[in-house]
Amino acid sequence: MWYKDRGWDLFIKYIKFARFILILSFTLILSRVFQIQVFKGYRFSKKSQENYLKKFIIAPKRGNMVSSDGEILATTYVSYNLVSQSPPTDSILEELSSITGVPVKKMKQNICEAQRKKEILVTLANDLKGRPLIAVASRIDEYPDLRIIKAPKRFYPYEKIFSHVTGYLGEPTKSEISEMPYSYTGSLHGQSGIEKTYDKYLFGKAGGEIVEVTASGNIVEVKGSVPPSSGDEVRLTVDSRLQRAAFEAFNGRPGAAIALNPKTGAIRLLVSSPGFKPSVFVDRSEEVARLMTAPEIPLVNRAIQMKYPPGSAFKIITSAAALSEGCIKTDTQFECDGIFEYADREFKCWKEEGHGIMDFMQGFANSCNIYFYNVGLKTGGENLSKYAKMMGLDLNVFEDISGELESTIPGPAWKKKKLKRGWWNGDSINMAIGQGFLWVTPMQMALVVSGLATRGVIYKPYIVEKVISAENDIEYASKPEIAREYKLSDRTFELLKKAMRKTVLEGTGRILDIKDYEIYGKTGTAQNPNGEDHGWFVSYGGGALSDFCLVVVVEHGGMGSVSAGPIARIVWDEYIKIKADAGQEKVNEKN
Image 1 (cartoon, rainbow, N blue to C red):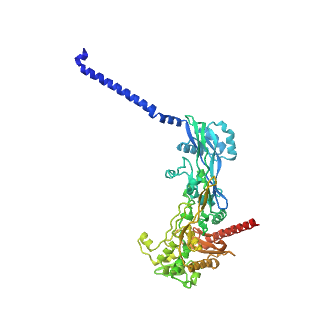
Image 2: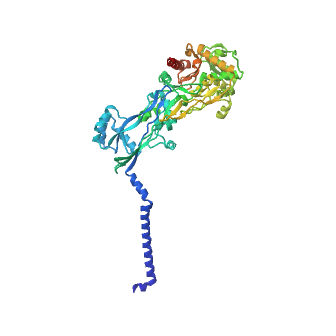
Image 3: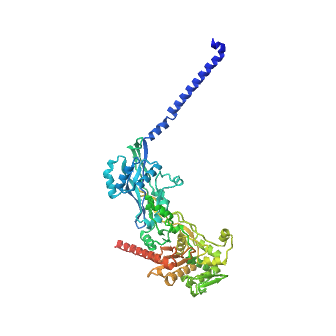
């Protein structure tokens, strides 16, 4: 037979090989079936479940911010949003636009944003109120895919006045989200101010709903829900009356003002002008783009994020260094004829005709530059740098609002390291009147003034008093903390105090001469190579006002007595009124 002709053994080998291939193929098929049914069955089942069960996040109500006098600075109210389970047609969008007043273009932008985030519900219109809300609600049944849902909306009653204190909200970056276990896709978080620093307290805890949806994404039924938890309340040390008075006194001019209690470090006001409306970030309006590029840089917190030469306000430190090191005495005299010549340079006094012969008290009270050029030469850059640091100008300890800049305090060692050059006498002359390489923030000057008020004890500034949970538990409470202590002789402290009082009574700071009250001050005019000079006024109180010190700087304001002085007077008048009202309330309580 044919197989015998070709060989029986070869035929058997063909049969065995074919049988092996059949068994192997069958085994592989069985293995794959087993893998799909058993090992991956749970995964496919879960995936199938996810295809019709979706989690819908319910945003929590963000906590309030409250001023020391009980005013709400930031809060959250219930708003009504129009949402759709699927993108509406153009004709429906046109109809909805006519009802709500929201442009079709805006609705389409919202749809694209929702699709990018893979959200279940597409928000077509935010924060519907009044007639548009009533009109939509009355016709909602005509549009099966549409729903009106409640959503929390951030609101800032004082808007610009407290904008750099409260800060604003926005979507976090990927790196920020990784540090926020409480965050979720689309949630808004603090981007500046207290909103940012205390975000974990204010945010609350999101809730959610498990909803059944069809293959096309329409919601069929709510299977279960967990309610959200409200955020904590943050109570601040700032007084809304002082904040308003200071902010309005700037009248839109760029600058900053800080007042604090030198005995504790509690900030009573913190103003940066111009301000901005934090609500535009919540609404994601086109105004945001303008704010980001505005030449007046309103988003910068000038109190801590802008550095200026301190000008003649630095003469406080020059005086402390010169008196402490024995470089001058109170009867040391220098003659001012308006110009001080040194080497081949001329250094001018602000008073062109000069002040004549002046001793220390007269030179300080009248802020005579010629007097302090001479003092600077005698004192030297090493001592000026040493006392600037010792008295708190190098401190960078404010933590409640992020972004504080470090000061630039020059000296011989600094100049050699930074500029690879030696320190000249001209550098000491400039530094003595707060010019040259010296740059500081208003906050740092406020700490210097607070240290004078307490005779060498500088408290760490803070603006958050405490954080209280919805259950009324105290989650966080601040307490006075010493940032630095330094020593000057009692005589030196007394001379500085006397000189600052003379400035208010007889010198450049007479605008703060308020009957029956002790206020100590120093004006400053900082030369600015890029425009008008900056105006400073630093001050602190004595007696009944010993718990208050104030620093004001006006960008391009010119002389400090003219620009910053009137603002300082308005704030001090308001503070005196507040103290008087509080005293009257205590009397009424006793009666």
